[in-house]
Amino acid sequence: MSGDIPRADELGLTSEQMKRAKAGLADFEKFCSNLETTEEEQFKLEPFQKLIILAYFGGFSEVMALIPKGNGKTVLLAALAVHHLKATNAAEAYIGASSAAQAQKMYREASRFARQVDLLPFPGYMEIRVEKDPAMGYLRVLASDKADRGSLEGIGPTLGLVDELHAHVNDALYAAMQGALHKRDGRMLTISTAGSDEDSVLGRIRKNALELSSVNREKSLMIAHDESFVMFEWSAAEGAELDDLEVVKEANPASFVTQKKLERIKKSPSMTPTRWARYHANVWTPAADAWIDPGVWEACYEANAEIPDGSDVYVGIDVGIKKDSSAIVWLWKRDDERIVVKSKVFTPNGDQPLDLSKIEQGIRELADRYQVMSVSYDRWTFERSAQMLSDEGLLMVEFPMTNERTVPASSRLYEAIQQHRIVHDGDPVMTSHVKAGATRDTERGWRLAKGKARRPIDALIALLIAFPQADQASTGGGFEW
View 1 (spheres, rainbow, N blue to C red):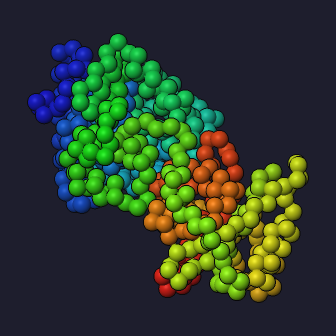
View 2 (cartoon, helix red, strand yellow):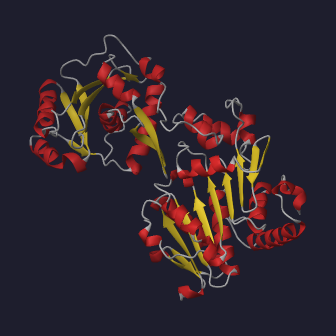
View 3 (cartoon, one colour):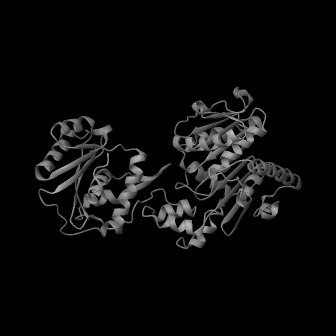
C-alpha cells in the first residue's frame, strides 16, 4: 500500500506505528469506497491524501497540511469527520471553518456523506449525530467568525478538524481544540492554504514547525515533524518562476488540478499576481496585498479626460464612519465605450464626523450640471439622505456592502482597469485612494478593502459602487437592482 504514498518513510514512524497507520488508512479507504462525491463517483483517495491520512493514523496528535486551493480539502475533511463518527464510541468531533458561509459548505458536504452511512444530520444545530441523543456521538461544525472562547470552554474533542486556518478571524477555535486534545486522547488535522501574515496563528505554527528536528524538502513537498506533530507543505520553491505552469502544477498534488485548469485560472481577468502566488502556488505573500499594479492605473491617464456638461453620469458615494473621509465619484460613458472617472473627497474637520448635508449638496450640484442617471449608495450609512434625495427626484440605487455584491463588483472593476476601459485625469487624491486599496479574501472570492497601512480608499469604494451601473449602461444592459 505504501508504494504509491510519497515519502511515507520520512515520517519517522516505528514499525509498529507504521503497521497501525496502514491499518487505519486501509479502513478509511474502504469507508471512502462506499461514498459518492457530488459527481456521483466513488471517492478514491489520491496519493497525497493517503500521506496525510497515514500520518493521522500514525500516532501524531496533530497533523497540518498546507496546500493550494482546489485540491479537495473540503471533501477529505468531511469524509474523515464522518468516518470518525462511525468508528469512535461517543465521539466528540468538531470542524472549525473560517466563516459561517464556509461552515455551511463544510456541513453540507459532511451531511451528504453522513446520509450515505445512516447518520443523522441536524441542520438547525449544524450537527451530525450517531443517534438522536448527542451523548452517543456527534460532529459539530463551527465558524470562526461566530465562535468565541467562552462558548468553547469545556469541550473534549476526540477529533478536531480545522479548515483554512489562514482565514480565521482569531485563534479561538484552533486554540480550544488543540488545548483540549489531551482530555480524550484526541487528534487534530488542520488543512489550509498559505497565509499572508507570519504573525498570525498559522504563521507562528509554521515558523515553529520549520525549527523542528526533522525538516526535509524534496521538490514541491516539505515535511517537518517531531514525535507528536507533523506538517506537510506543498508549494512552489522560494524564487520559483510562477508563470511556469509546470512549476505551479508540482505544487498542486491532486491529479484533477491539471496544467490546463491552472492556465484557465491564471488567465482570469480578476486574477492578481499575489493571489496566484498565494492560493495556487501556496507561497506566503505580504499582508498588504495591493489589489492592482500602480502602473496599470497610471496607464489609464488622459490629460484631457473631462465630462461635458449635460452628460449622463452614474454616481457612487462612500460615507466614512466617524472620523473617516467620504467621497463622491461620478462616471460618464464616452462614445468609445471608455468610462471617465471624476471624484470629490470630503474630509471631516478635526474630531467631528462629516456633516452629511455636504454630500447631499454635492449630489445636488452634480444633478444641476449633468443628467444623473443613478446614485448608488450603501443603505447602512446613507439611508436617511437617500430618502430625501429620492423625494427630490433622483434615482437612488442601494448597493449593500456584502460579499455577494462586492466580490463580483471588485473583479469587474479590476478587469476594466486592466483593459484600460477606465479613464482618469490624474487627480492625485483619487490616485492615492486607488493605490491604497488591498484585497480581502472571503468565501466567495476576493473583495476590495483597506490595506495594512489603513490609508483612505473612500474614492475607490465610491468608484466600486458606481461602476456596475455605468458598466451595464455602456453595454446596453440596463440597471442592476
